[in-house]
Length: 431
Figure: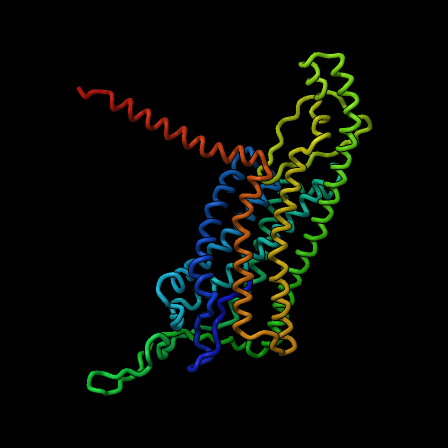
C-alpha cells in the first residue's frame, strides 16, 4: 500500500515535526470508513479461515487462500489503532503527533501494511500460477507435480512472507525520531490572562523525524532504487503475470465449454435412444453411465477455495464432462478474485510510478495535498476489496456454502442441546 498519512512538511515552526494529513477526506476515510472496513474484513476472513482450516478442506490451493486471507486481514487491521486514536475519537489529528506515537504510527500505517500487502500480491500471483498448472498442464507434467503439492504451498507461503519482510526491512533505517517541545497547533500560541498580561505559548511534546546520516548522503540513489524495485518487483511484474495467466485461464475455460457443448449435442441422440427402450429409472442410470465418443481425458484440477470434489462413482466422469464441474467453478472463482485484485492494484502502480518520476527528475507533477488525497482514495479502494473474497467464495463454491451453513447448524444444535439439558435439570426436584 502507499502511505496516505505521510508527515506534513508545511508548517510554520519546523519542517521536520510530525503532523498528520488534515485534508477533507482524511477524517471520514481514516476515522470512519477504514475502521469499519477493517471490522468487516476481520469477521469475514475469520469465517473463511474457520472453513478453509478444516481437515476435509486441506489442499495446496486452499493453503494459499488461507495465507491470503491472513495477509489481507493484517493489512487492513494494522492501521486501525492509529486511525481510531487520532481521527475517530477527538481531534488529535490537528495536533503534533506525540513522540510516544511517532515510531508506532510509521510502523502501523506504513511499514507493516506494506509488508502484508506485498505478501498479498505475491500470494495472489502464486495462486494464479498454481491454478494455471492445474488447468493447463498435464497430470504427468513435472511442473504440476512439483508445484501442486501441500509441501510446495507451505514453502511458497513461507518464502513470500520472508521476501515481503526483507523488501521493507530497509525502511526501519530511514528515519530517526527525537522528542521536542513545540507550540501547540490546537491552542492559541499566545494567551492573555485576566489582567491583560501575555503569557508564554502552550507547548506540547512533539516528534521530530530526520533522515539517518547514510540516507541523507545517498537520498536520491536510495529512494530511486527502493521505489523502482518496489514498482517493478511488487506491482508491475506480478500484475502483468496475473493478466497473462487470467487470460490463459479464461481461454482454456472457453475451449472447455465449447467441448462440453459438442459432447452434449453428441450425447443427446444416445440419450433419446435410451429413453425409448428403457424405463424412467434405467433412463436416469444410463444417462450417468454412457460415455461420450472420443472424449479427451481431462485431468481434474485439485479443489480450490472451499471446493472439495466428492469421491467419483463409476461412470461419473461422463456426467461431469458434459456440464460445468466443481473444478471449473473453482477456476472461474479464482479468475474473479484475481480480476478484482487487478482493478485496484493498477491505480496504485500508476501512482507509485508518478512518485518515482517526481523523485528521479525532481519535478512536481502533483501538490502534496493532491498526492496524499490520491493515496487515501487508492488505499481505501484496495481495502474495500478484502471483504469481497468471502462473498465470492460463497457465490461460486457450493462446498464452501455447505460448510458455512454447517458452522451455524452446529452452533444451533449445541444451543438446543444446552437448553434441553437445562430444562431437564430444572425438572429434577431437590431432595
